[in-house]
View 1 (cartoon, rainbow, N blue to C red):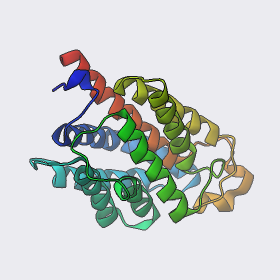
View 2: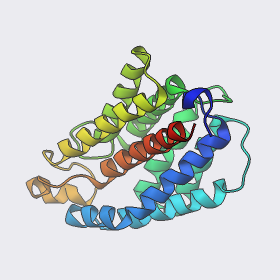
View 3: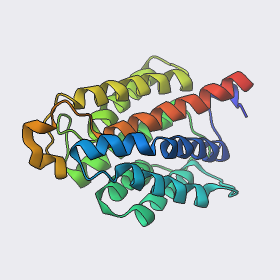
View 4: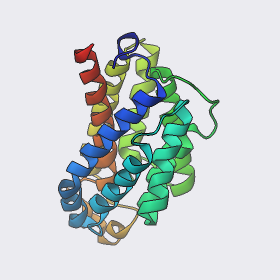
Length: 221
């Protein structure tokens, strides 16, 4: 499984990583549903499960020649299957992340940071949310900052993902202190305080699962 101690992933390894990520998101459907039911429509867990299940269908058994196509496949699977704001926003995270990048044949920490920095920019442009608005941006932005800092410090891929996971998790915790400014939760005003955002939680699960997959590859090497 490992290439250069898992610091560089081939397109097909990225495919396998996202298959693992999808499994973890699906496993967390009840958890995400519970979180979203507290202040949202209660359908976030279902939507994310549908999106990643579709991504699995479009990834499994397929050979990929470049990094960009794997991310595009995941994103377009979400956009086409989930519907609603979550499908567009999470689809944008994967499609938008590689939209302005040259086609790459391998993924390292620097490219991963560039992809998610592009994803953050694309999501902000589309959804207009900022940190403290109680959305997925609250988890994604600190994760991106952690990835960029990890590149500067010459961390390994798994170390960078661990820092991104930690940043995302802290972002999730921070959403408990924010009043929601988007979606159904917006109408609750201060009643949304004390509850974490479901979209931010999913972002954390994604980074956590990516780190787990790479870490397992290191152990197998």
